[in-house]
Length: 389
Ligand SMILES: Cc1ncc(COP(=O)(O)O)c(C=O)c1O
Image (tube, rainbow, N blue to C red; front, side, top):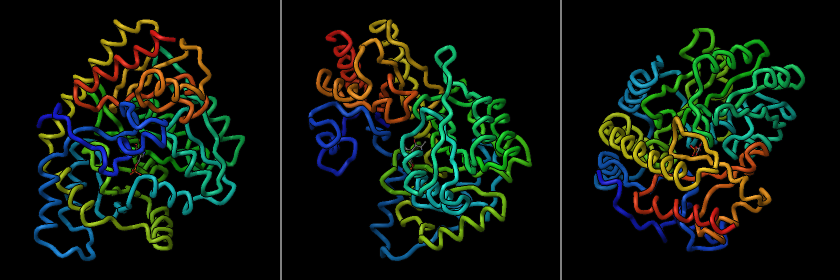
């Protein structure tokens, strides 16, 4: 497992490497944006995919008992979730699941509450389905995001909110929500008849001092108001295989979601996605451990760099994810111009905070899941922007 081997990804159709011209106006900027890693996959996953190519006809497939078993074991061991086979619904992606859930459990015009800032596509998928987006701004305390429960309750009381979409842990701030926060949020959902969608795609990218808690483990009654969304794709860097699953304990909710999955034919995962997910959860534990060691090292490099070379720049210490969220307000540049400024002046491609919501407007998101020499280069380019302007 050599996470420092530089692997050529140009001309492979990689969003991160081959869409630079389109997204940043320059194909030579250093890509430290979209959330996939420049690390090779676990050999066990590649072997599982290769086995299909070498030995099978690429016909229709369905999830095998061994795949269910790998998911059930992983969720039990890592997240203390008790999942049965019938609670699991497969889906081509977490975003497809969210779209299906919106259609199944809300009506046109209903409100969906999300945090501000939060993962950009949350608001897009809600709007594309003709539901209203309401945002509850996260507050910052000691350079960490905190939920504003009074605001959340006010919005649930005022608007016709049907769903709350939670990034658990939080993308882009890297926050691992505490048990107390999740307990309070879920109780509010329960009180106001809101279904909580807990998107746990980043839940296996948590640093050792923190534990990602799924709200369904806090109270038996929460299983009726919480749907959890999962995937091996983020943790094991296999986003291209398009595979995910939801856990829905409540039978009535589940049957409504299944109905829309059938209407839209969005319940299947391709052969490679099924095989890769099983190989990830059943056979790639060593790779995962090594990955977390590398990410911990990279995270430390980023923190040390910002503390010593850019002491005037506030940032959030990621408790999870390989995403680093720093505040570029000292540049005194219009928020809508930050992305192009980092690309033009620093030749580095970062995600701009404004795309995650107005409250994140002064921030930039750096993806540090890259080989160490590239990380060093990227950090120097960021510093160059602060030094130049
Ligand atoms: C919070 C969150 N949810 C969902 C996704 C995307 O999931 P999928 O590719 O399965 O649609 C991402 C990708 O970065 C994410 O950060």
